Structure formats: C-alpha cells, structure tokens
Length: 360
Ligand SMILES: NC(=O)c1ccc[n+]([C@@H]2O[C@H](COP(=O)([O-])OP(=O)(O)OC[C@H]3O[C@@H](n4cnc5c(N)ncnc54)[C@H](O)[C@@H]3O)[C@@H](O)[C@H]2O)c1
Image (tube, rainbow, N blue to C red; front, side):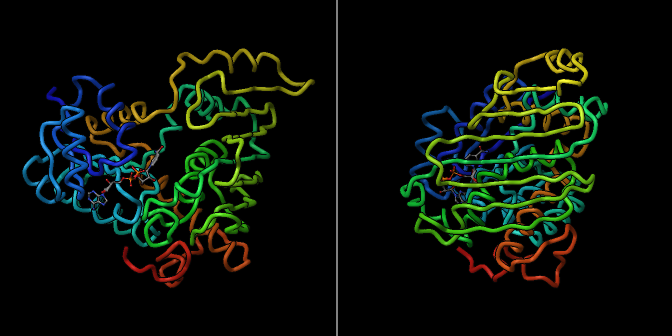
C-alpha cells in the first residue's frame, strides 16, 4: 500500500506532538507539506524537520498536494473553516481540541462529512493508551459492575505569561478557558469510561488571571446510567495533577498523572469483601503504551484504510462540545442544563458564552 500523504496546518508550539506521531508511523505515512500564515515560522519548521514544502494558504496546499490526511494544529476558532475546506478537498482530518467553537459549528462540520464521505477525528490522545483500552474492555464485559461515582480533576497551572499568546484567554479565539481547552481531555475520558452525561450544574470564575474566560470551573454531573460525578478545571493549581477516579460496584479505578500516563499511574482497588481475582484481571494489561498522538493516529489510519468512521468523531465529538456549552450555560445562567436542551433557538448553540462572538 502507498503511504498516506499527510499535511500539517499550524506550525506553532504543539506541532511537536504531531511530528513525533508521524515519525512513529514510519513508512505508513509521508509528511508532504506544512502550512502556516506566519511564513517565517513555517519556513524555519520545514527546514528543521526536513518537510519537503511549505505554504502560507491552506487552499494552495490542498490543490497542489491533495493530501489524504490533514492535521490541524491552529487556534480553536480557526478549526471549523479549515476542517470543512479539507473535507471538501477530499482529505480526512485529525484536528486538535477543541474541535470547534460551538454546536452550530459542529453541525456544519457534520454536514460536510455527510457530503464528502470524509471524516474528522478530534485529538483526544488519552483514550488510546494501554490502560484505558484495557479498562474500557473490562467495562464493556461488565466485569466491574455499574459505575456509581466519579471524580474528574484537571488541576493545572498556567502562569500569566501563558496568556500573552494573543488568541488565548478570549472567548472569540480560545473558545473558553480550561474547561474548553485543558480539562477537555480528562472530561472526554470521563464520558468514554463512565457513560453519556445527562445533566450538569456548574459554577465558574475568573479569580486570578487577566482573561475574559474562566480560570476555574466546577461542575456536578448526572450520567444517563444514574451515576454521579464532579469535575474541576483549573489553571491556578501550583501542584499540578490530572486525577480521574471511577467507583464501580466492584472496584475503584484511579489515574493520577499530568500530561501522559503509563500503566504505573493507575491504581485498582477492590472492596474488602470484593472479588480479589479482579485485581489479576486488571493487572493483565498486555502493553504499556502511553496515551499519545501516535496511538490515536494509528487507529485513524486503520479507519481510513477500512473506509470507516474513525474514533472520536460524530456522536463522540459532539458529546463533549455539548457538555462544555452546557457547563458554561449552567454557570452563566444558574440553571441545571439537560443534555439535548441546547438547540438552534438557544444562543449557547452559537457561542460557548451564549453571546455572539466577534470574529478574531
Ligand atoms: N492535544 C494536546 O495535548 C494539545 C496541547 C496543546 C495545544 N493543543 C491545541 O493545539 C492547537 C494549537 O495550539 P498551539 O499551542 O500550537 O498554538 P500556537 O499559537 O503556538 O500555534 C498556532 C499556529 O497556527 C498558525 N495559524 C493560525 N491561524 C492559521 C490559519 N488560518 N492557517 C494556518 N496557520 C494558522 C499560527 O500562525 C501559529 O503558528 C490548539 O487547538 C490547542 O488547543 C493541543
């Protein structure tokens, strides 16, 4: 099989994760070009990483290169237009989180997928590590019983200078605060493992940073299966951690890490009167792959080769955006928000803060 031709749009800080992933896939892929509106930056990046060609316009790149897959690594508010242009040009897309700025934008992307038969997968690399895949299979076999209680904490620290990057900290360009761009990873994992969410009640504030969006948010969630959980997303926590705890009927499963986990970051506990053999089943994890971009990219290539919808797309891509819109709506309007209630007659369908967002 010929290698899949890949192009990257956006050569800023986060390109490194994508380059590492593409290199890890070896002969299965060929990185043909990079695009950035900042010509000096894209020239420096292609020289440093031996990428054959660069462009400063996505349209020019798409017509000249006709890539099979495009990685989008630009600020969130630019994603929708770039995704749709790539799909229309016949490419599949692997797009950084958050996928887009609103449910309205998601639904536009969904229509473009239907028109083109191409798909976009959101970068949620944490889903693809060995421990999560193993846990998901135990859950699917119902080995752990029903999920009952969950805790999902993204307690990170971002100093004031992090917000000097002009697109950060503003509703119009970053789309939201740590809920939309940082805690989104663990929140996606929470739903993937606990089940679909049903209702949310939240509060948020801007306590410390000079930004428009929140620097801390907290929420209580009820799941469709009856389980209950709490979430905290913060950029104000000097001792940083990402902590996920899932209490099932038969076991507590926890991960405590920061940006990446390996099997060693996970803890599995059965109750004193529980089934000790479950511990052996948990310990029988076959590999020790971290949740990184290359693990997700490998699965996307498999989907491309089979012509199937890739993971973290469609329903799963929408679920997390709907949750974020609902969390913000709950915090800003002091209401409990039910899943499915944000429809095109609601301002929160069009913008995460429920106000018309001016273009950046
Ligand atoms: N998955 C992860 O772990 C992870 C980590 C950090 C950031 N991210 C995400 O990656 C994305 C980019 O973040 P970053 O930190 O690299 O930002 P950055 O500001 O460092 O880089 C963004 C680059 O995109 C370019 N750009 C902007 N608009 C463009 C357009 N229309 N066409 C082409 N290029 C354009 C800019 O010139 C810049 O070089 C964001 O969505 C962010 O949330 C993901």
